[in-house]
Image (cartoon, rainbow, N blue to C red; front, side, top):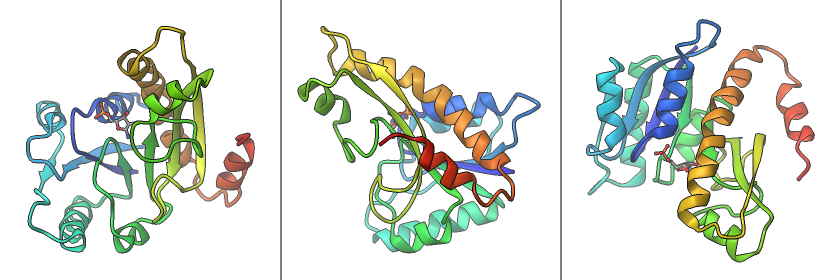
Length: 202
Ligand code: GRF
């Protein structure tokens, strides 16, 4: 399958997905890295690795206008699936519906806990024993789509946002590549999503 990855920043999850695709058994190839931020650091890595890139600043455009531009780039690249990897802009309902069941996101919490921002600080403040990360299908409501898989990560007594972020990211890189590969390889199994969702004790 042809995968496009959308980023806004450093793009370490993008890198993890890209390097996982070097495995001959990986069911996807990365055909485009797209960004709403022309200065996103991850674009430079994608270019250096020979992956096509596209960027278009969202400043001055409505959400719908910007998403139309992004959608055109994804279509041009003949992407079958889209992986959001630190894409820090809320998507229009129209864009989300165009990619329904073909767009996934990684979120740094054990969803449904801590949707939105500052997930690690919120987990620390709440005294949680574990933070973690979740891969979910993207639906119009933010961080709300069916969770396909997640990895709990222990919070240590002297953790701060920085140390917990670093540890969760180690888990993110593995979870994202594995879950996305499983999702793409599910082929025409109509029960796959439901089985995954049911398998997660929320
Ligand atoms: C990750 O923590 C991811 O879970 C969140 O945004 C961050 C992106 O980091 N959605 P990076 O750009 O992949 O390093």
